[in-house]
Length: 574
Ligand SMILES: Cc1cc2nc3c(=O)[nH]c(=O)nc-3n(C[C@H](O)[C@H](O)[C@H](O)COP(=O)(O)OP(=O)(O)OC[C@H]3O[C@@H](n4cnc5c(N)ncnc54)[C@H](O)[C@@H]3O)c2cc1C
Image (cartoon, rainbow, N blue to C red):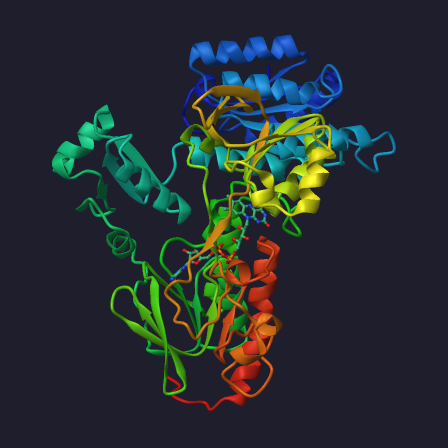
């Protein structure tokens, strides 16, 4: 055992554990010593040389009430994927510990061996690990500390004592408590939730005179209490801007998802007076993604929340203004400017307007499946996940072309694909060529008039429970399910002047019919049927529903905004 130096006054045995398992005794000792040197003041570093020894030690920690913050295991522990299996078992014993996979380089020290890379791909796609570290390097500063610090910061934020801007007292399982927690989490506001029937909850109720008939209640930093808070109450409590500071802007952007954030960043950084209107939370759909793995420059993935908050900070520093808890509900032309009416009565005028209001994927609405979102339950296309699903049994839900294409794509990797369709025949909603391909593919089976009613599993999604039209239930194995039951554009508030397709997606540029434009020139890239109004990201007809595309379009559309502004009168600048 390596004994940590105590500086915090606590007994070292009470420190959370950083646990390491590696059969290579030299590597194990070197890593454990490095971890002790860097983290020993706050954590106890413990190590094991074999899987059984490691599991026994972890069970002992659990029985003794010792918290384990991190488990790191070498990939080649007992056999090829031993480290991954070990981390899965460790996760059952200590579900909160960060799972770190240690991966050795090849003998030359130049690259990760092919087999290890395949195992790593598989483990990350199915969320079997949280972080990975390539073993090696001369100094642990080069390869070890940054990743371990990242894992410990995540663990502390989620499970350790941390700063609480707000304390909430409420009923644990009420939907208003859930909604409040979700809103604060999506806006990355650090908070503590205390169930009203817990000891701490009762203490807070007594100390702050919380009215238990009006829960949930939020206790602010000055001790004042807001009962049953609305989003606007929360915004005010946190000092967040909910009204525009001016009436006229060069650029008004509707939606603070990736497309709106990118437009805000480039608009503001290029000198345009820019405001972003957002009714819910920074980041849109991307902010709900636990791990975005296909965004350029983040080979280890990045949580959607982290990505969008960096973008928001960046846009804010360039001078973009953000107005929250306001829904854009009307659009009209006024004196050559675009006038957006907001849900709380304000009007804001823009010399140019970018619609970046995104879509909402239709959800399955199966609560027992939700915890695997992004880690077995996927909304949208299957492209990036498919190669990692070799030999797995997977499902696709949906009967349209996108679902058919996903099933075919997945069938090249997975051992078996089940296509789950509510309708009575694939032909009703899918192109004939796809139907024929599906019928000719031996490892795809189609369940018609069927829906998903439950998800089952412990560490990973393991099975789906299906129900047919006669109410008969069947449980089938599935480690991943791709849901493609459509997405909805929230564009009903735009008047008829903004041309849309049959599904409400906004037509722009060359997609506009020739008679659609109000002016006598071809539309600019991303321009809608109304001059000076642009649409980018998922809300745009023909977009491919990806973070990278939304960011790209939001950035590029600012070029069109400049062209529009250069051509139009500089009317009504505020
Ligand atoms: C769970 C999940 C995981 C995903 N994972 C990935 C992934 O790993 N990789 C990837 O590339 N893509 C992923 N996507 C898709 C990706 O998130 C979207 O393509 C992307 O967010 C689209 O960005 P956007 O800005 O166009 O729209 P959105 O992200 O939908 O943002 C639109 C914003 O506009 C706001 N808004 C809408 N209407 C109004 C209004 N009238 N007034 C004010 N505000 C309004 C909404 O509240 C929202 O915040 C995922 C999507 C989901 C749901």
